[in-house]
Length: 477
Image (cartoon, rainbow, N blue to C red; front, side, top):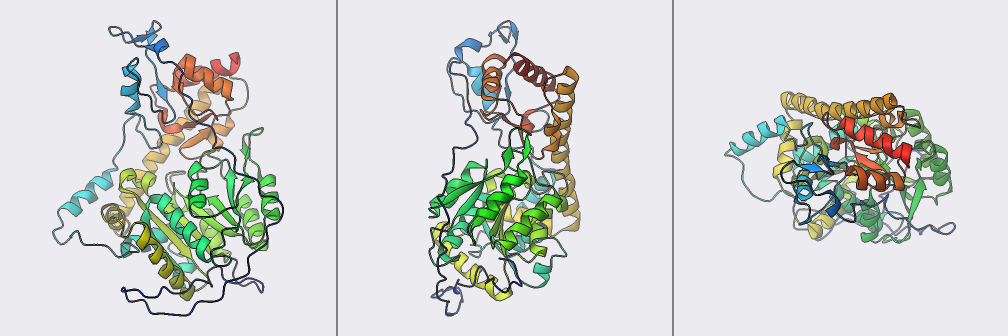
């Protein structure tokens, strides 16, 4: 809810301070529930996710020759640009390669996972620190982690931080941050236990967004237009029209940067238009920030949208993940940054979130949070981390540039500027389902039916093969 509006009430004003706690919280009265907003018009249902992986129906047609390692007389080339779970006695080669290609994560040019050098260094520091123990963390998480995670999202000069109206909740990855935020909003936003509040998710979006808010109890999940397949870019007009038509106090899930799965982000001027409509329509922004620093190589650039909304006076949630930008996929390190209207409201929100966390995971793990907190609180380690993140971002950007260059050199029909216009780990190639099917069955290049690929599946060794295969698919199909 924008601040300073005569009509606006704080989005969190109905959340009471948690009572009956053994953790030192004192009882305080809560407000009466706000009237529920009436839905306007029929609620469209969320469509299917943006395509499921389509592995070949039969693997027997491309068994590698045991001696020559060939496929149909050629070198065995299998390229995984999406996660593919293929287990086949007929094709052990495929299974062996699959174990190296769980492509929802970063990979080096050798196709291997990368442990950030700064993470290795901090792990050794933690292991040698005999003052640390395995006692429980506070329910809301490691304080240094929470504070510094919110700081890199909002910026060192954030007015919200300076005014004391920011709080953080350590969570089990970005998904945990989304779930804690969703649970709170369902219980206390726009009335008590208002499951009818519309939740808008971009079309397409990460498929878990729908599941998280549905499982949190929301009954009215809608989509807003985002991707324009004709121009292979953002459908800004459709997005703004859907926001204008949304009932007041609706919740909008926004990708802070590196939109998953399209890789297409609004420009700064477009973000300003989006914020203007959301402020006028009293819409609640819930940012999902899974790729800060990883998208462009610059922490500040990737956080621009979140910081702009805060500067415009919005109360908001920002779910942060440190899986990609720290490479801590299996440590489940996340944070939910809460920006409220004032410090009192933030404390009321955190007291309720502590109650939710207590019955969800009881207590967060410490290892990943300590790695992140140690890195963010040391100027030397922080600089090293930013350099590591830029290394990953630069490799992805290079693969985008090289793929586009090769397709244009081959004279592949169509325009391919969208490959470099998009950002982050994923890219919508523009290939149609029949072309994707051809890529999988004939070229053994595995990607989503929607044409989405993970850019980290590209390497200097397979770029020529992938580009020539795309050219062949587009010209033949």
